[in-house]
Image (cartoon, rainbow, N blue to C red; front, side, top):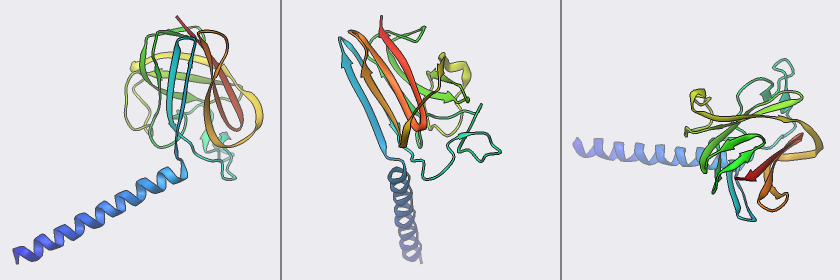
Length: 181
């Protein structure tokens, strides 16, 4: 009797493990991991994020439009886990002083501006982080761009010791200057 129970539990563990593995693979196949890295004149930045696709959906807009990411609501700036950014030195993010370190990065989209927020807490990105842990909030204008099917974050050099964080998805583009302190 005990042997049958142990075999049944073993089979259940294998099935649950396989199901969990499949779901993890499915999430990452729909929204694969992405990394942006750049060192420019001593300023080194690394961004880890996941890359959802538009797939014929309305990405940004109102709830009435059925937008995937409605204006005025928390967005983890990608999919799956929270997007993380690491500064290897102290920086100026637009006009905010940021200490060297790793931060969770999220946004609150708007039609004309996004609030881009750095937060010192970590964890799964689906739930909104504790805003008391916010380190900085910068307002970034929304620029129109050519259509980008898969969410993309890039780092581009500006001039020595500075970079530009570029976020693109659908026809939206954000450009955020980052300068070494």
